[in-house]
Image (cartoon, rainbow, N blue to C red; front, side, top):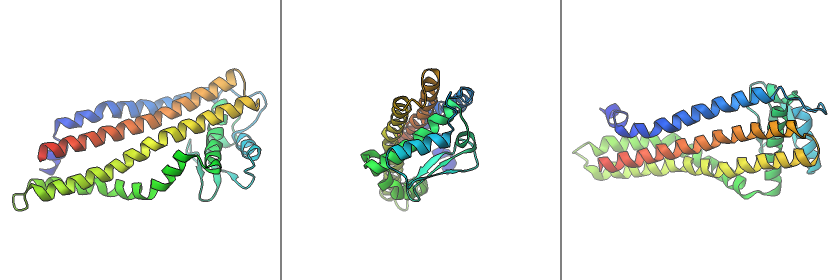
Length: 239
């Protein structure tokens, strides 16, 4: 019965457009990265070289650049102050790899300069992790209680409301992530252009790669908003 309450409902249709968008965004970033990895920079700089250069130019000599196995799992870890670059980025001279490496260095610069959105994102990560883990179980518990005459709808309403509020934390996280990622990409392109690391076709290739990557964060926010809207609609129908 619970399956029917949650999945056998017309509101599931709300998720379909965002699921398609998310799938397309992931496919697009993979294909764009592969396409522009064939455009090599004329200065033969690798992703690791670019990350190191940007860090040093900003006085961030203490931040390390490390190689990790995997594909496009690049990230900056502010706790250990390490930029980790994947197989496809660390030693590659492709323009797409250069763009990704510069993007991660941009995150390091954001932390160093106290960029407000990234400070907010870091602050809410603990409660977001808790909220994302508890939101759906609590909401589903609310659906069960709402359908039980022995408790009445009051208890169910409370649990569904708590579930919605907890889920909204992940939506806030995705919302704050957008300016953080867009800013890191804009920093990357400005730096690559001002330092002459890339130019012409190379710079355009890096820019296109980062724009494709940015769409995955837009898709994540759209998916989160659609799921939040669906929970609200289901709760209102059960009340």
